[in-house]
Length: 198
Image (cartoon, rainbow, N blue to C red; front, side):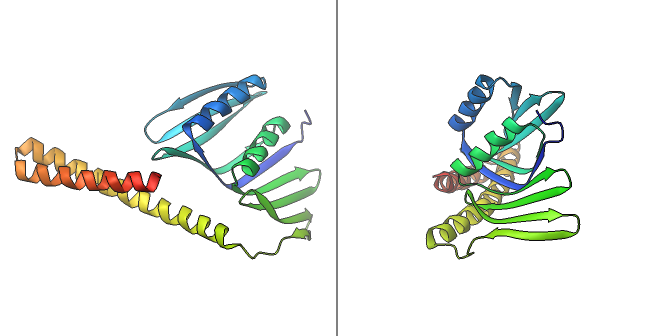
């Protein structure tokens, strides 16, 4: 492995279901990586050992889906290839910075496709490639739905937490009418969550 090898993934966003995560774990183990994983209600973490370094991939739970998001610095060429294949296969988004000697190559990826490629050397930068930024209707709808659903999901999670607290208080105080109202509201929230996950 080239010791100076380094790739930085900024604003990474990929969406998975649980089956995909289990397949990723199998693929990484078959590829010779030492790893372990853990999870709670909010996050699934895969820790991958590459030499002396431990890379933790955080998959945030969103209903029945998981989202790998954030910034990662990868110093292992095979792991970087694996991550880039995922970005392409899952039509993900990222800004990828490749560091080599005194040069940085920056790729902007949207829906798994490179839309801009810039080479930076010292204070100079040169655009090597730039795709026409016109998104087709399907891509715009995907982007809008993705962002809108995420905001709705966060709001519903807050409402769910609040309603569960109210139900707990109503049950503690023995207020049957209030507890029934809470249960009805929780049913509505559940239906909305199922619709968003679908």
